[in-house]
Image 1 (cartoon, rainbow, N blue to C red):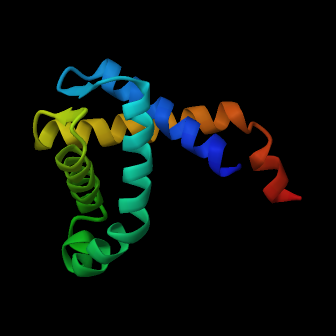
Image 2 (tube, rainbow, N blue to C red; image 1 turned 90 degrees about the vertical axis):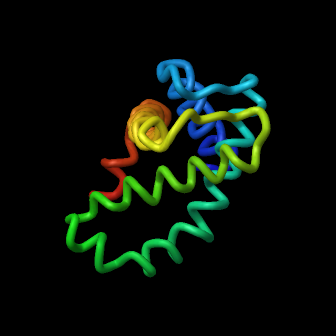
Length: 120
């Protein structure tokens, strides 16, 4: 899947998540694109560092602490972007779950034969 298609899928997931969840506010779809870009940047560079620093607690919680890391990344995006607002930590956790679900769903729709290609 190309970069532009992944960006579109992530932006739509952010947009749908903000539409469904009451505590998340977006100024519009261009802001959703910026949120998707910023979250992608944070996930590429900041998330690995946070995962390494929190390996013991992540192992103790059987990986559930990764939800906390995702919420921190969303709250950082909220802090950086003025058109994106998340009401609190629990809302950020729920938003991260929604965005993950919508991303999975939209990627499955956009690329339905990806599973078959990996088997061949």
